[in-house]
Image 1 (cartoon, rainbow, N blue to C red):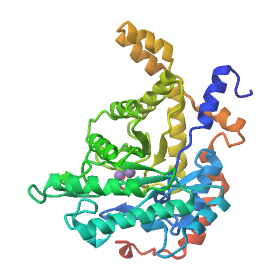
Image 2 (cartoon, helix red, strand yellow):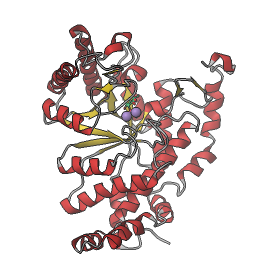
Image 3 (cartoon, rainbow, N blue to C red):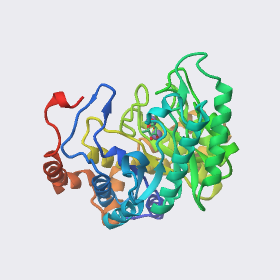
Length: 398
Ligand code: RM4
Ligand code: MN
Ligand code: MN
């Protein structure tokens, strides 16, 4: 059997060809919870190892050519970022979004760009502008901003003053962007701040982005919403405002759990992709959205979890592409709720796995990237090489 067989398959395959997913360097390293870390022998420690693992994901799936970096975790002080970019190229990937880190240093205890101390605000701005420089050096066109800023108790700080400082800082960041670079503003309603977060939701991120300038857009991290939130509504709204810059994909059951995409609520993922593909169909053009993964796999083997994620992303994009848009528009025009929902469900319940297996094979990739990766023995080999240096006594893990 040859793929594609039909013109529709051809169209779907061509759309999938352009569907690229960025994986995060931090998804390949050892992570944990605030209660501790369980180390994995195969997990990457250095940026070279993280890039090598990301390159494996790309090698088996063919759709993850870029890797997001976290400035403090991936670039040693005074090191040459261009060397990291060269290493990525050698491995067959490139550096994608650059994530500054203004949440870990002691000085950020009470915030970064929203800190009441101008010296600390300045320091945060300096770091973000240094990250722009890193972006320039590694050939990245995306600055991805997440702030841990907020307060823990009522009365702790002036919420309005903090908003103004944040606004001022983000405008200064926008002014400092290099040519062709975009900045994405991420929001989160809680954690680590537990009373108020300075950029708590998409509306605040939207307002901050608008104030910052035309190259600022909103980043939707699917784990950064309160329970029950209708994320696809946010997605549709932002698309219509031309303010949806990108995603951080992950899934959650309770909070910002960073579980693998679609593991808890695959129908939500489908509904998100449906809003994208429906808008693309109506507009007659593809949307410029950065599809990125933000996951930390505490328990699953990192590379396998990432390949599983990417396959899930492709499956749900394919399902959304299968929605019979004409039938949907027709049902909507008749206020036929039952039929409209059935159109969505028909696509959602289609088993696209055989189709994707054929698609991958036609493109010269394994039909089952996860199995192919398992059989390659890579994980076992790196576990032997990397595991030697890791502590194996549980008491030293904390
Ligand atoms: C945050 C947020 C950011 C990520 C950090 C590590 O919760 O999702 O995107 O950079 O975690
Ligand atoms: Mn995120
Ligand atoms: Mn998060």
